[in-house]
Length: 360
Image (tube, rainbow, N blue to C red; front, top):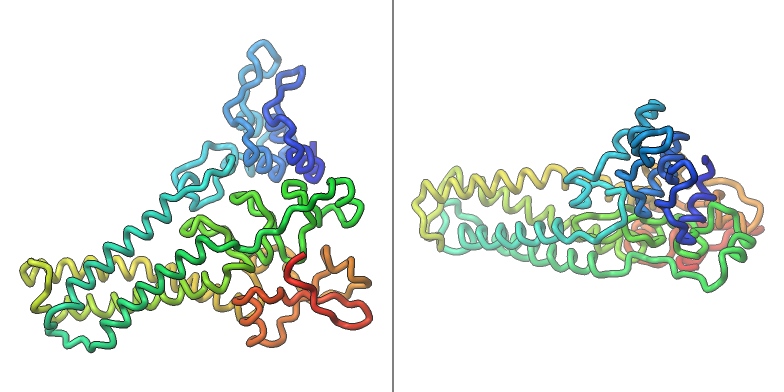
């Protein structure tokens, strides 16, 4: 009941997740009984039914997996076995259910960006303003907004660096590499710094995170585009804050919006508040991503228990598993590697240092 690798392999081979044994218990009941968090997560992602109960005629009357966890006092399973909430359904939190690509967050972003741009254009960019906003500030906002939407579309549609599936059977893959380097779901060998994304159900090279706004993973193929999306979105919000604050303090004349000055100031205050509200978390995200890029490090590695670091290895084959050598000595080279899909900075020691190709 406690071998995660064996459970992952069985699930990858499409073993029935809701099959009941002679006592009426499903794999989810048994995992909850053992208190194994990772196996419970895997089962839920593969479609295990949270509400399935042990038949009433058995000893454990009508017990769901959550009831079993409560009886065993496995507190770490309480929140996991609860039905997905609103944040999970909107992909703002891992839903722990079979993934369905959600476009609600993406649609909300595009809608807010469109409305905000139109209101800012008609409120401040046209007409004569008492704030004496310079021409370059006005064009900076419009250009930043357009570039933000452009990089948003590229980041969302571009391949993040999916690892190609192998034609070899799993037995051969397990014979070639260590168990942790084989992804049974993708039927492939995971290259260094790659990780399986539960949302996309694919392994991604230099996996950073799964972005609900883009409904796409961020990895080797689109990390640079994602960073420029953050930069220009931040620029558009900063200019919007400046323009609307100026309008709130000084007013505006000649606006294309047919409202009185008092109403225009209220509208500017709403736009100012909205821009400031979104700018706060975006500043934090941009700061983290800037650090990651300069240090040749992903968000996944940043918060991992054992991030990739300089470690001695004995052979090239060892570098495909836990002994990864990440060269972070040159910040300019780090930025180049992270923003451009030219290699992941992982090296193997085979008598000398040699760069490992970005793709397997």
